[in-house]
Image (tube, rainbow, N blue to C red; front, side, top):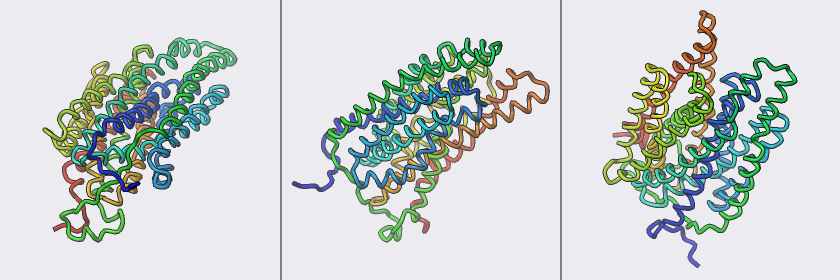
Length: 441
């Protein structure tokens, strides 16, 4: 039997479909955070900054687990690594049950963190796998297909969990204002119990899929060595000799932070502007559907009509423009511009991966782990946004503005944090991805 790694010259429809299914799963799990943030804020009586730790708990796991995940996948292979990731995600879902019983925030965060560890294994395996499953110049196209699966799942997850977790939240908040301490406890305990059945079902589904993926027909592929037109390229011995890799990691770090802000803050932002939770629960879906439409456009255009680098430049410029539009508009118009960030964000991830991994050869798996660690931008940048909202709200209330108006204004003005993020992405798109060696002629 020939165990030599296969190059992807045959029909890859089946493995692409399987990996798309995995992207669907962690898209579903990831994007329910938009509903979890206002839900956790209510049942645990949190500040805005504290509530955004929901995103932090999920994304910080990528820092903790990325290098170990790369080691595990090197030892056990892509298929077993994906299986283990799904099983760990199932365990994380089960933690939500005792968390709801105790209504203890750190237990909820522990469950989210454990799910994040499982997703790290999935991402560390799936992203490089789909990137090198075909020609590197069409890597963004394949990842865009994965993005469609991911964001459709995210939209469904946001709608389903928004309906399950946010149903009646406005009434609960109104009753809490006049309830006794004992009555408030009963109301919040009842609301917390609504996570029991959804997460029990999620755990069962993840466990079954984790067992099934071990039998999936996934061919073994390895990144090809690429000869670079750079003096000394053949003598490179470590990842520190690839400056474009580190610039790509930085670009991905700020991108994930911007993407999480666009998807996970929009429901809370809508509520701060005076929209009811019943209406605001749909807002994350607006962002994700904008991403799906742009992903579909990317599948059609890349690489036949538009190069990956060009798509990244356009995305960064749109991100800067839409961010300014959020700051200088109000009400539903401002909501629409937050959702429009989905257009700006859609092709960033698909473009950064192949542009960063190009030419890395045997260093591809280590580089992939570093890119996965960059997902921690989603753990750091959204809470900074939350802290800015709290600080700006406090300053406005000190100056005599009522709490509702202060929150609305603070939530809007704090979106300026997105502008430096998209600027860094633009720098990588224009120049950074070309900087393949420290020695340039």
